Length: 101
Image 1 (cartoon, rainbow, N blue to C red):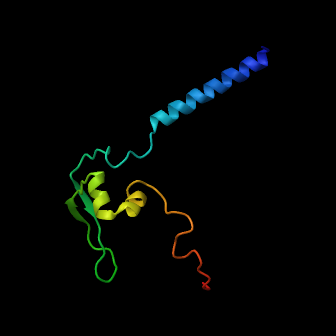
Image 2: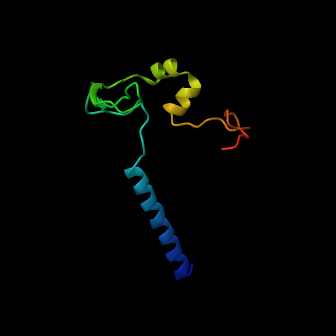
Image 3: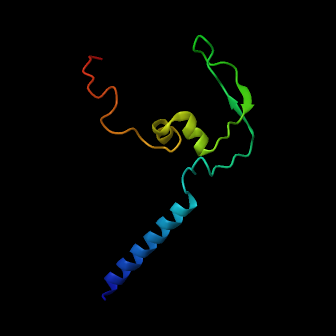
């Protein structure tokens, strides 16, 4: 092996190691079943009847299992809202929308 090839291999291995370390450091958003929250209360701000933001209110955090969410939302909505999925392609109501504006 030439010295250039050795350096190329060493550099590639170092980059892979750094990438693995970065990904291990920040695993992203955990699934809803593995999240741990420190507070049982949350502050929410709902809309009043005119659509304007109401005063902030403290409410109990909603804690449900994935099975409970799936039963309440249905499979398609659960996949999008809770499991971070996306809608199926070419199925939306705006697919063949040719209206102006």
